[in-house]
Length: 539
Image (cartoon, rainbow, N blue to C red):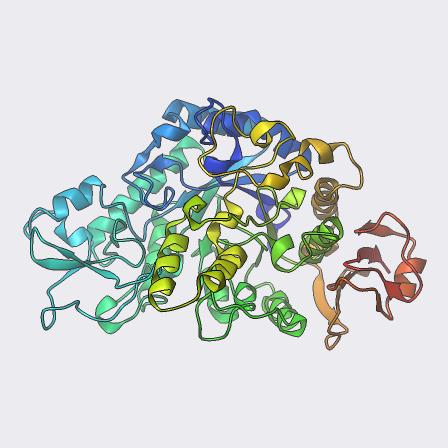
């Protein structure tokens, strides 16, 4: 495999609205991010993935874009953005822009013109259909509940929106749309960005008349055209959000011939704690054997013919320590265990802001404190369907996107040091115990565990390129695997439970001359893994 700079890179995701506020208006901004670049440099990350900062009316927190070549007023100016690129570059950090081109805002000039008349030159930039029997053209559903079709009074047709009705879908079959997308991408490439995270990439080839949303027949043709006209040959990092990805399709997306993109986000592991065939709000406990099977499959899927991404969290997902760890008595140990388990694997790791501190889910006492459109919609929809409020709230506590969106916890001062004003969404009340300031200089902190893991990846080809072999595949408590490369072997052994468990690999770990990182500062015990203990060691 040809080595690439992003093979041993670590990406840190910044949700700008909640990261750092520089001007006291309660909303994070670009100057706030600049003020924390030294923190990210200390952690050791190479790339910042920036959630959307473009001009937007904010119906879906910036994923509804009204101008791709301007900055949202709340976040700052284009000059601030250019300054962020410059200051990040000084610290050898690249900026990955979030590219949202499945849809625009309904306040984008293209859509404003498109809905005025069926003869508008922008009409075919979007997907319009006549009513069928006086109703929606078909039964396609929006990801945010309800029909994916919205009636437009002005011209007597429906338009398609796979997300909010304020997010009309672009018509990728129109070559003019594609050319507009290449132009806006090249605008940002010329500014010096490090690449793109492409939102819902697998939906771009949709054929709504045939009920096809993901993986349409022209999808890969569009991606190859995108590559050729924008980032191809420029050594940029590109990652596509692909909820429908399989190992087979991931090999096409991330083929080393570089005709498409660097890698995809696949979500098979993320779906393991919902009832199969149901919605994400229909909860079931995680079965560790399922997690091993899925992560193991993705680890062994590529043999020099593709590349993997590694992540537990993002802006759409709950906090992993609350989800599959223990966010109370074993918060520190389980957060470190989950970090060690993931960062020992093959692929490019992504850290979501606050994950490196073990930040936890939020439990707002009232639905009125939630801001996320998806959360508010499901609350209303499930109440109407007759679900009990307590049951709905339990699902929201487990899976709401706002779990990831509470402000970053910098220190124990008011509002966790995020803002001197009133934060746009409430800070998690546990910020006095969980914050960056208390962890940076503590060698046993979660932050310093992540810092160590990043350093190991930078200095160790076995972690980057080594083969993966699952150990103890049928053990219901222990997740263990081996990485091997050119005669070097590293093992990772993790207790996924809150009890001490017997493990046949413990003695080997105890005898190892080189323990690279572990979740306990004390040496391993003979035969026993302590609650949420993880050890990465050389054999």
